[in-house]
Image 1 (tube, one colour):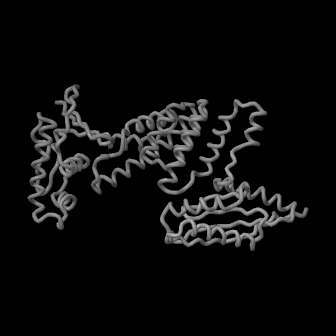
Image 2 (cartoon, helix red, strand yellow):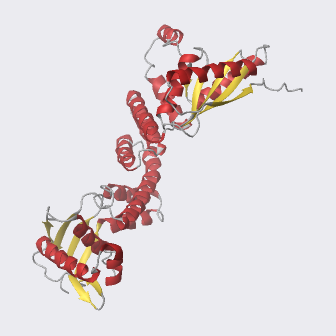
Image 3 (tube, helix red, strand yellow):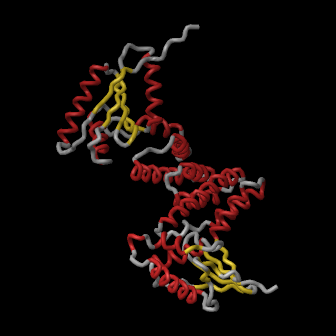
Length: 396
């Protein structure tokens, strides 16, 4: 039986192609000067190489009625360009795209092999396996993903498929990382996390695994750096804080950075700390711990403590007014008052020693200070005050 020619197309990452025949592989060059629409048209034919594609389908996708007075002629011209392009890429083949009755298809004597199809196959096969075969197949799949599906193609059809392959890839990474962690393959974990975060930078699973790998390798300072970059990006893009799990890993890494200090140095560090004359800004998780400790103090004292939720109205400048409010709170409250962010436009704070009435007076002063400093802001500050109650005494 005569050996068939195989055309290989890389669709994950940079669009590339090569030809294999009788054991020899030859790279093919995609011309630089090719229009985006013509390239997208060719890529659509490649992706759908296993079926006949009707003229109606191509016209509906690439020439909606509102954009072309003669879509049939436009399709005819595009096919001529596509065949000319394929002739440049594979000069030894003249009839790669066949015209059938009302549709188009690839020449059946030529086999097409796509890295995206191979990647999908591996991801689906891995879910049926176990043990070493499961790990090896996942590794092959993850390594095959060299970038997003047709990353330079901004067509709707490519975007939907891109999201599909991204989901497959991220799921494969999530399945693979625990297996690598069990075998203490830290370097591979870090590399996979870096590539996965390039696909979805907000996925905390990969940040946690990357930080854990750095800690296991004895580089807690790199885990701290990873946390800092992740936290900054997360706030800039979504105005949210890292999850509690990320915070806990960060606390561990940060404490390990100090593990070479002597006891007296640690005591000095804790006692002296940084002091900036502002209220104490912290994460919501830390805020909860402070409130829990305050409730214990209240059970042994007669002091009053108030919790306050401060919010901005709808007519605000995103991020800008929230940062302004944060600044006024930190500068206007006492140095011992903890403040935490709830979401993009609201904060929660604790006023130790303040009754509900005093807390309202304090917040009215904060409101005046905000509008005095930012008179042009359209923000309307509202607040809700609640007394912090000590824990109920259990009677045995």
